[in-house]
Image 1 (cartoon, rainbow, N blue to C red):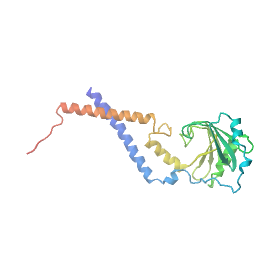
Image 2: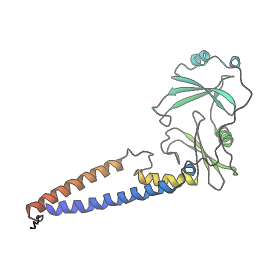
Image 3: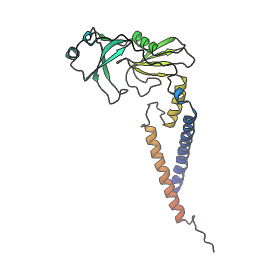
Image 4: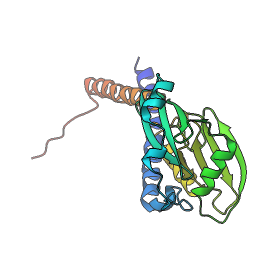
Length: 242
């Protein structure tokens, strides 16, 4: 029995020690990197606000919209490229990156609007102040690059600048999920190591953490059993001196 206890203790200590080294090293990286650059917003700008205000009387009444879409849970006013819209929430997750279902309605005409490739591209360009040009556009339903937490279909617009910037636009709502670039991806790699997010789930509540806790428990138990065994065999002796 003690053969297997020692075997378990040896391999468990190796795994725990390796991950502890990764934690220390990735923690050191977090302390030396530029946190502003790591956010990926080097070429991001806030949306411009037009001085021209749209009168409330020019907008369709909220009651009219709710009557046309009775399954609406929540209605909010929003703007995309200076145009007013009603954002209708049909299915709501706990957080905005959870699964949600939206409808986007033109607040003046009542037309149901879809955030297609062209609209997503224009929204991305409006938020971008870098030197590059948009080179490609992709629609991701799941497994959103750079934003693994995002569970909703999202457009990715790539720019050919020095930082390889990508802008992500949520298809349902038209909101900017975020900007990402090589600096953010570099920091993201070490976040993945630090939180043991080897499955790229965007969360530390994963199976790897659970297994690590289980192995740590076995390390403690096997160490305790081994210590008791050595005590019984007289391996630990207290020396007294006059």
